[in-house]
Length: 270
Image 1 (cartoon, rainbow, N blue to C red):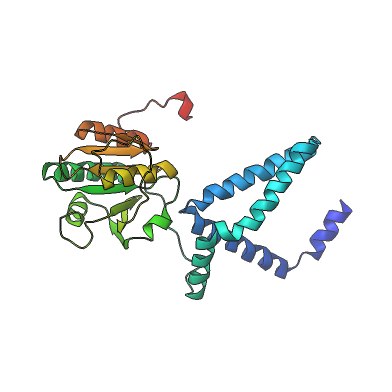
Image 2 (image 1 turned 90 degrees about the horizontal axis):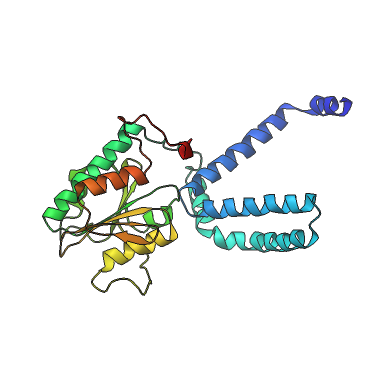
């Protein structure tokens, strides 16, 4: 007790400033990688550290040795794995934009409005046979794919999306990425799936939708230019020939938006 009191006596104002600055830097760095796939790697390293501490506590020698070697390898690989995020952090620091405010999560009404705008947009595109690829970001950040396109950061609306995909316009070729209730970017390049079992009649848009959903938890809505058919890619699988009702129900379910008229919550969601 006396030792703790002596440490509190030695605690000075400069120590408080030191703690606050470190906390703010770590918070800003986390918010920087939150929108990218790098945050999943951070969580994986944290799990390894926790398991390593548990193995050391229970004196599991072999497991502890193996995890320590893995952690050492990860620490050497961090500059390579996080190279895009570190470069972006240094660029924002040089421009004086490192300490910025971050957008908040939209409410329930806004999320339901986003679903309605997406459904309305896809119906128009389907009837007019205009090809489109719309990506919806979920928990896994896809900022690195947003960087490949033209940043927009505009309020999402069906009319806005339809205008983007009008043929022979500057942004019609490529994917539109939706983040929360805004159009983050257009004309984005996505990785193509190399799955050999993909049907031959599926084009580049469908392969790009599958390629992205294979490596992230994002959703991809595809409108076929030839047939007008609406497809949705989730977890590397493609659901085709969706009508308006099916698309709305799928988006509400996958985006975990509870209907305002529903008051029953399943026990596995508690």
